[in-house]
Image (cartoon, rainbow, N blue to C red; front, side):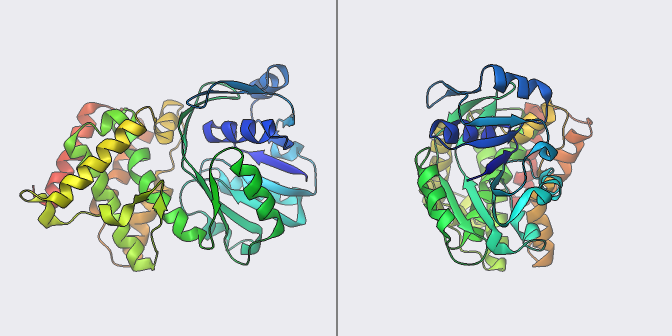
Length: 349
């Protein structure tokens, strides 16, 4: 099978290393000469929670998408959402007729891609383990997790069974007949983790030590649940977490509530389990790049307007992150405190 991966960031680096060490050959788009040279000299390196390993076999690095061979049967897109359209446009001439495009990205961009290509060629993938880039062709795996794959439209195909078997050798992987529900569920995690990291400059563990930051997490998620309900989304369990049950009510926040206490405890547990997780959007800010905010919180704001669902905190977060992208603000505790204050104003607490 002729396969390629585009997007050698933190998650992409782990995926490449894991697939290659399980004897799956891959062409890898490096984008930078330094990265290509490192792979040819040393290989792809992963450290962290799963141990340290370096993989060189089964990896063929190329500098650009245009350097890939033709007639690719399988392509993994692991780019930022800001780059996914450009990546797809450039890789189209390289695809054979009966190809499979696997989007291992955050957000709901499959909705846009499905307008351009046949949904039966599109395989969505939810990735819930954490990783941080640590240099060219090197990543730190910061937390364990799972993957879920599924066709955007149409029945499960033979290649899906092969891919499911292959990915399951790396992390627990399941197949879903409704990947849209799975992707939206993961989105509700991303809207807080990614954007709050930009605002605070903190790891997930540090952020979730704070009570009102936890309430802010639950608030953007609650707005997302309301949008999902309006869209007819059925939220799925993610890493055994029921996001529907975490939605807040005003009554819970005024006075003592066992339901609210339970939700606070869940977030404390998440903070401990994923304490070293660093927001990918924060990493983008530190590298002077755009974040995915318009495809995460911005998506909820856009869909909220479409379905007449109020999203005040997601709107605030999107506007604030734009200021960080423009260099008008820097991540800090002070900015996180402003977010907490905005959350209190929304709930009247």
